[in-house]
Length: 570
Image (cartoon, rainbow, N blue to C red; front, top):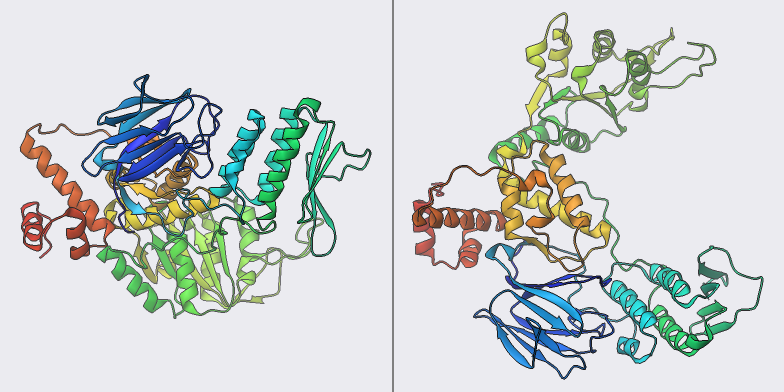
């Protein structure tokens, strides 16, 4: 989770253009604006030249916008310019396309950089295809369509197969053709076909059959005569692009099957570290473990980890005791004997299926009293009886249980059985809520964010300072589960290449009421300094050297300020 250069400006494209990205985040450096797919800021519109203008974002602040002899001109506040320094929010124009240039706040800088995700800043064309030729054909609608698909392909939003499907779907509509299909032969000689119907069209001879040296065919039925030459030229270019892609492999790396980061393994919270150290020791035994904690704190994740650390060869089987009625819960636990009811076949319960392994009983506090009695006997014996059965079935399982209810406050005849509680709680642990271990929020947020971005196929540079600050301030009543859901939701709102910022969060995160504040300058400065230190320490895993570098402080100033702000630990 390294820091990256701060963004100084945000360029937001206005209007109804169907662009791969509508917001571009600009740090210090040079950016080319144009309709070419190779432009840093690609705007595939008819009135935009291939290399229309150039942005120079200055280290000292401000932007120099220079028109590069475009056909339709560049504008600032609707006045045509050749070269102009811009230091404040402005309305820009590139041909007939308008855009807002907005100075980015200090919160727009990246606090957590995304790792192992494809970023769309400098796309590389597949093979040796020169995508600048997209602009050379006269049919503007088809040209813009191909340009958008090229951008999506290069930004790694789609696979090559999806690229072809989009071409067929859009181009058939634009040209009025009755049918289109793209086909090729694979290693076995079988022809792979892409079209709207999914089946090879054999009824009539195509009106146009564009053949590529790679073996790709682009067949078209009843093209419009006036656009035939343009369709053929663009079709050949599309086949050039497709032939440079590996058809059967995804451009994006596939999501890994790794589990979410455990709330204790790698945790920065001392309480959680000690809890996991204890769990590692008792995992090798067979005593039952009762895991307590609020909903969403990771009780099942911890239970799975204990099973994995135990070395037990049997399965890890879970049962949520709150989701089934009494009869179904009993049958699911102990199994059913053949003939227990009319037409019932014999089937094992989870205690049999987990023989030699681990049974995890979630929400065990919701278990009916009658089932509690049978479970107690199973805990004290090495065999069970199926529902309707007369013969004992030998089982050997390790019991793990979890609940978000305070069982000790509900023990007795009308609540949870005291004897079962003490049997299940041979070792009991309580997972703290996320609001009590905020130092774990950055790494958990980064993991869920990257997984969600990878699954959605969105390239993104990371999470901004402002977004991280919001995450750290939220109380997270839903704990880790709520954090995961929030990150997955926010990623779906991202444009390719856009960092996750405060505006992507739900109203639950953004509507936190702020207490009455001291409006003095001294208080505001102190608050800003504390926030800067808190974020720097969270992002750098508490490494003083890296925190000093981010904050731009000498060693002496760093430790003096740490003490003044009450953040020193020793």
